[in-house]
Image (cartoon, rainbow, N blue to C red):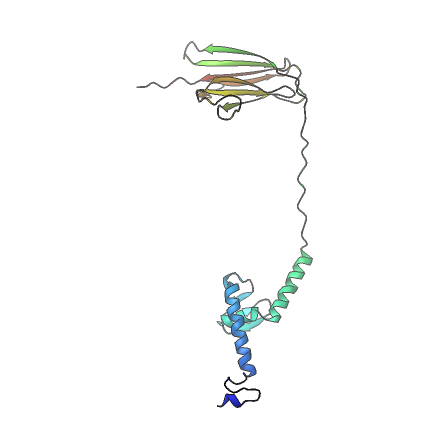
Length: 220
């Protein structure tokens, strides 16, 4: 067939493509575009039926192969239905504002100085374990406040050059300043309530803490 002499054709060029050829070329371009942008395994509207053909659950269309379905997804009908679905979901499920975080009022206290204290060194006559007994006085402690304590390694504090031989025992209770005691960095025995215990006496406003060090393990 002489395509050069078709109506609208030019010498040296192919003939004017028919409508079916143009449509086939367009669908192929759409299919190639869809292959680059769509993963059929993640497409919620793609379904293979029991007859072996493919369906678009959004548009209720039937397709003979995956290429036909992919080309369909790039078409006007599918894109319009996607836009309608998105608009309907946005209307039915408006974005809810994030719940406001509960406001926690931070209590502020005016520091009134350091508490009084007493430290007693002890040794168990039976086991030979060394222990320390701390008594900290809080006569002006705030209502509903219970003194707190914790051990701090030498590498946590920023006051002195760190020394692995020492650790710090801190006591805190508002409105008093936090105080710290420098004690040997040995393993504390917390095996029972006689070796490690605390007591807060609400009547006398005194806090007690006693702990024992574990005995060093024999070399042989």
